[in-house]
Length: 363
Image (cartoon, rainbow, N blue to C red):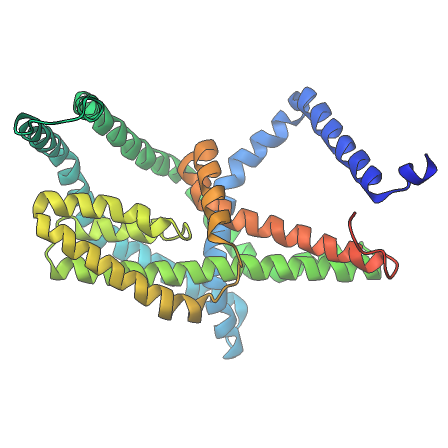
């Protein structure tokens, strides 16, 4: 009995039971945490958006600082660049995207009628169709309008959510300014309240988390921008309609590793097919070329294999996040998982250091 209670497996089971008991007790008293979650929900979007912009712009501020530019002046220069970029997007890109998106929504009913006509023609000219296939085609035809309405509702709802976040935008510059100005002071400040050993461990953990996030956000931003530019140039060459809107969609979707490029390819191929079936082939060729350049040239030099995630792990995470949190879950699940993985790995190695030699196995 004594041996059983001192075994690592028994202690692991006890810890797991205690954790689940704690989670259960927290769920029973969730009303206590409602004000806290309300506060977190209010600042979550501006904080995350400012954090994203911080990792994109911080290298610029650091570069200016190396050239003897005072950090405050460097931050002001970055803010001026952001304002200039916002002016360019608002006056030159946004009107084109709005016009293309409006025309895309207006043309959807025509495409639905075309698909229904093709299916009806195919059914009328086929003498031998398996009953199961015929029922499937009939079901798709009957529900085609419903599918399009759902997709349109999702797109409009997605953009509605984005415009809803505009009310939080005024907080982003404040968060961003203090992140750029005092971001490197947070870890030393917290470390003052810890012992030397815990302080070193905490500094190492925060360095690893910062490296993980900066590698993903900076690398994925550059990769997504390069792919979007290549696709936009290719779409202009073949004169594809809604080329700028589709390129911007690919820029956003490429932040979802592995499956993002495939998700952005679907609407481009469908739109190209309705414009000219041959253009759909050219779109596929352009995407293959862009992905080959990205996979063999851009990503290895910009990101390398910093996250070290298996494609099957990425697909599983994205499927789970998409079903639980929708589009935002798709965007945030990979960096969130990478951070959690970094934290678990850090504490696991810290635990290994404390174990006597020869007793470093978990079981």
